Length: 305
Length: 145
View 1: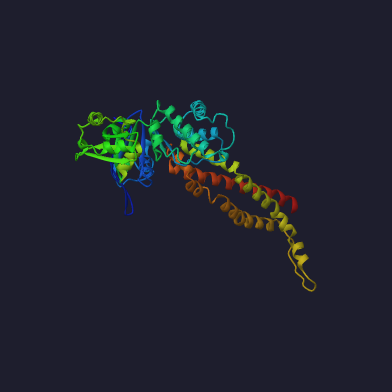
View 2: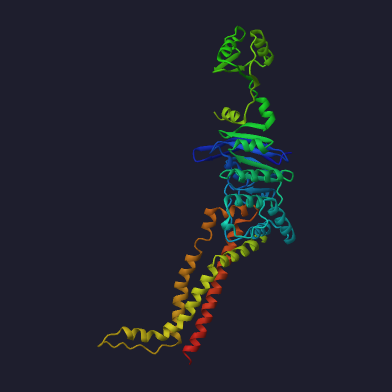
């Protein structure tokens, strides 16, 4: 059973339908990348999971417990990091975590040991100054610490890496990776390289539904392009190859740019051997012969278009 | 209940750290001291404005005047100060989003409102008691019967 299950979720704001029957499953101990355009409904989905927004219809289950609008009981399984976490500027990190711990109902000793452990994890251990003077990256890290305080089974991060510098981003991603063993992480982002770096599963939200969902390798396998890139010494060799009789078939499309030829095959059972055969027949040796790998970006573009 | 107490503690901490409590107590202390003083000095203040030819006779100031000042200042001016200081306590948290972290930790909305209310009632009570005490002391000193 998954940590998070979403079934047929609908939500509209006025006439604007944001979610149109969203179905999503997040298995335990995974890092789930939730990708989509701006305004696709990522934040809306997260708010519904947290019980901060009321869905029009559909159900959300967290660890077997149904989410209700308002005071959601399922929230004790969830840690949430908002896109721009806001804290009380007059407190220092330790005081803030103490407040969070008291609200979550932890005992004094638990709060103390857990806060120290988490501040160590996020690198704010010796930070005695007030949160008011913190940088964006430090606030983001403190946000992760507060989200992990009650040992949630599900950690939800809303664009944790947006508006951070490259070092800050790397730090946040490392922290998330470190937290992976203890919890399941769902995080939304537009930065596809982040997804590729740490996620084992991704879902692309488009037009109110999941347009793409699965593990990264599964998705790449499913969308393999059957395409090849060949680079030649000269344009002459390239055009000679391009105009070969064997390649004039409806299932093959060619495009040439200078001395580089791209070959796409619509037919699944035709493969690189065929092209290699043509090459040896023409007695041309290419400089480069490569299988085209689908990038996450091209997949995203394809899905969203 | 746990959330209520924790949030109440946070509210008090906030009022001390942001000097709200300090300002409240200071303003009320000033009122407390000046109430009997103004009552005592009122005839002299009025007379200093009087030009020749007009004679204003005021009754001898008494403790009653001091207490009249108290009820005027504390409940009108004091209340305005209170409103100015505490009007933003909920709306600022809502607009900044500081509550989201805590609400998703299981803090109930009722606890937020109740603890804010409790805290404000306590601050108001403390201020009024301080003001009352100071007015009482100075009135006894300035208007010995």
